[in-house]
Amino acid sequence: LIKIFLLLFLAGQIFAQDFHGNKELLTKAIVEKALTTQTDYRLLEELCAIGPRLSGYPGAQKACRWAADKLREMGCDTVWLDPVTVPDWQRGNIEEAEITAPSKYANRTLQIGALGRSTGTGGKPLTAGVVEVDSFNRIDKMDPALISGKFVFFNEPFDQRMIRTFAAYSKAVIQRTKGPVDASRKGAVGALVRSVTSRDDNVPHVGVTRLDSVVKPVPAVAVGVQDAEFLSRALKTDPDLKITLTLSCANMGTSVSYNVVGEIRGSTFPEEIITIGGHLDAWDKGQGAHDDGAGCVQAMAVMGLFKKLHIVPDRTIRCVLFADEEQKQNGAEKYAARADSLHEHHVAAIESDRGGFTPRGFEVDADSTVIEMMQSFLPDLQPAGIEWIRKGGSGADVSYLKHIKARIGYFPDDQRYFDYHHSDNDTIDKVNPRELALGTASIAILTELISKNGL
Ligand SMILES: [Zn+2]
Image (cartoon, rainbow, N blue to C red; front, side):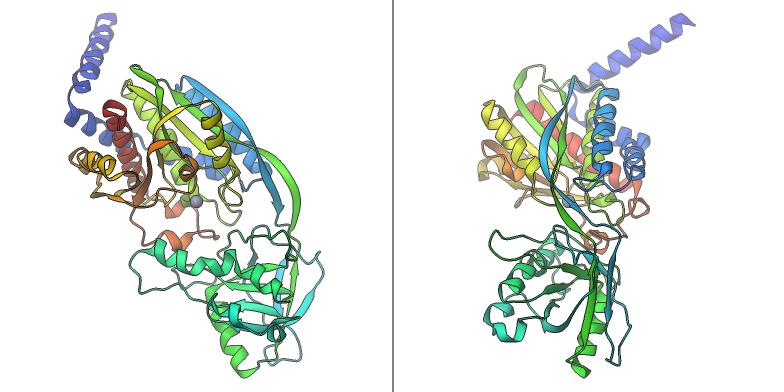
């Protein structure tokens, strides 16, 4: 029996050495291992079970400790937690909006969710009339007299004509990030913002709204798309209707969270670093399964694949789970500042923050010569489903790294992401294990190629 084990062990060694020189075998092994083990999906089940992990929530602390333990178990050479000061915004348990008597729509409630960093109403009802604007830009030209003392209702729809959903999102999301501040500047008492989503549903899709150092913060909420449509119709027949809003959310100052980092040291150029990662914080609606649980577990599972397949990287590979992407991106800022102060040599950083869907490509923020070199990797990435590598944006977190050859964004199919984004519907049942695993395999292959070849 011992002889058999010895033979199996030797066979394993030979196999491990065998595909090290053979790119096709290595790529095949990565894809098959990712698809058969589904380590990423198992990790996602555990992460989603922790509970809401918005910065400042107890779940955020638990998630950091959990991730560090997992990275150690997976065999990373070094694992550390780098403290980050993060906003502590708490939703609380009251968020209600209804149309006030004597309107014919009186007592009709609206599906709402407070926007992140919004001030609350102290749990007390706030009643005011409503002025609708159909696009964010419109508010600039509006007479403050029309706005003063009212709720501004931003009702710009997600542009369904656009094929690229991230572009449609960017176009519409400004009403959420900047609308409430602009409304307050003109005297509004609050802001109601149509949910920025590709889905015709009625769950609020939340997200951060910006604060301004001079402008008074006002309560701001996301409204379900169907209720936004309803409100728009109601205002046409009853322009004087009033809404009563009650919110218990509040900014509680700051809290401490962590960038969770796991590292496998490179054998030939250990000082050259390739970062792969996502953000560990998530909105407290749903489970943050796609945003960005998927990106986190993919980066973690890449580390696991390297260990399981005995791939010794030439360059150092770092899995970084960033703190606080959703509110202030203090985690990304800290990671980049640390890289600068330690004079670290960063070659590439790959971020996965567009959901755990079927692989399509990688968008690269780099010089054209670097992009051309990466495009020569395409034949090795195709077995995982990658179709293209093109110039484009990378990701919110890795974009902070300034002295680096390439900032890279993993780009899966984007048609469903904004159906679930920042809402109760971003739950693990929306994640397909095979699609998630192919993303992990794509990132693992690209990481190994950059580790072997440099950029
Ligand atoms: Zn995200």
